[in-house]
Length: 555
Image (cartoon, rainbow, N blue to C red; front, side):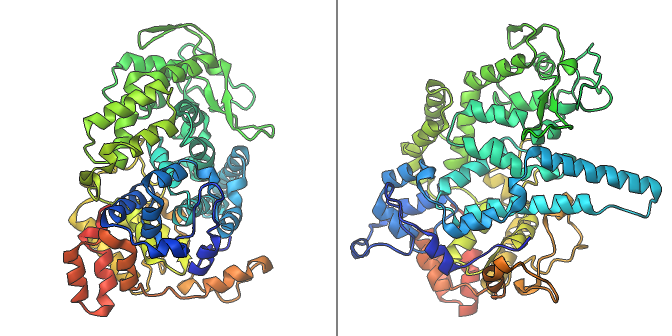
């Protein structure tokens, strides 16, 4: 698969004015708008919006948002379907072939290569089958490219930060077996369609997606006293007993919260309810790999959260999801996490109460809940502006957007995120990554960011020359394919004829970052003291000082 290389010139062409929403390219503000100078307060709020509803400003964005106004910008971002994706972005996403593969196609190929590798090992231990690793690498890389390209170039910035939030909330880990080939499918089918929809719909989609079923082992769970024999396509081959992993995380992380009022018995009973929710490893052409296997389901009566659950097969699980989605503890747990993500590490109790009430009143309508948050005085308060420490993913994206980088190569960015401690889809535990200062602020983390800022500002991207045998690469190495030196095609490499424009872009060198342009783009994000230090420094160091400054680390 060819690299996706996106230039500033093409990025500006992508921006199409929305007839309904009035969205304009960041560099294409009207003459009338240019004539008016935004007030400092308006610019500060524009910065706050661009950093919380997105991954930071690009050139011209602060002026545009300040002139558009807070309410108009929030309204626009809450209707992402009205903002057309740039043509080149759509084209780049369409070129990521594995994103269009069905769940069953992905699973079938992975299982076939796994079987071939097992046979090869039995015949000759020195002989291997690299096809499974190549498949996992391609699928993982393309899922990562899609995520990063959208975050960098989509005008639907709120949608992208919500995708990150909700994926992390319903976290699955790319390093576990079958999950290696399911990240793109999971994000596209179980997360992205629902970030501004109903919470219950997303809860159900994640519960039935093969990535979640495999990651938290529910596909292996067999009811006590059931025969466990294989129905057509049923897995695994042998009964493995009751598995409580999914039931526990469903209540502790996905819905009620650790203090949500459930007991260990409730965990066990919920695990019994979800027996039979598994995978169809012998699909008949259907896109979905989910299968309810009655012969693996515990047919007995259950007593869960003070309710008596009569035997109903798959309907028991659907009922449990309904109950959890409507539970007051779920409303509070979700509301606190959203407030922490968008407002403060220790969110105001008044805001959490407000969001929980709206969640309950609207039956988990996430668009209404998100609007309530963004229109709240707690979100707009000066104390909420610039008070959060950027996690590595947000730090990297905000640097690329602010620098208006002219030659984006996505694959090396995966290696950068690895070094910064936040690999894409790389949190091995179900609770995902933390979004607090305590989780990311440390001397080692700061040193890594300063190293990145220094190299990036000078026109070099750390990770572009990565050796496959470099120490410290973990399971995520499958997502760090060898990038080409200076993005040039290797000798003798043939490219498809329809990718000639992309090939020409790939031959351009990464350009040094313009410090003056960077300061203009970031506006009040960089304070007077830092600006004074930058102005007194040698020109070659100025951009690095900005990107490595304490000011830029916060949002």
